[in-house]
Amino acid sequence: MYVKNIIYRSNKIINDLNGELDYGLSMTNLDNKYINITQLEKGVIHHCKKCCRVLGELNKKTIDENTYKIEEYIKENYKKSITIKEMSKSLYINPVYLGQLFKRIFGMRFSDYIHSLRVDEAKRLIEETSMEISDIAKELGYSNHNVFLKYFEKNTGKKPVDYKKTRNL
Image (cartoon, rainbow, N blue to C red):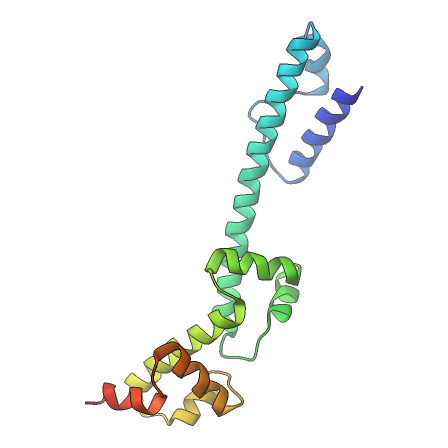
């Protein structure tokens, strides 16, 4: 009875997640296939290992899909004032889980990643345009010019004005 419940539930979970077991126990072949308890035990263990492998692959697929969604969201919104809570609502992902996933995928916190992208874009704008530093800060979503200066210097080791001087030599 317990074995049938394990088999039924594991098959249902994988099926509900659109996964496929290339080999799995079914309710029909359970009664016919195993003659004694030792064979049944081996069959159930084998089935559970297969289920774990399939669930691991489904989890990796989900992480890959979430990574793509995260990257697309950030590309579209990093110049705006965004938070991980806003992104989690947009992507329908729990904010705590998203923060943990983000750190695992990108190796840093969400806010640090956003500031890093903005600073990289600021460096490009300093090098390729004649925009004023304050306009660049506004363009990149910084409502406070001093906050922009702080993160720019933190990421480059230079103030934007000094960076501009070294690039325009």
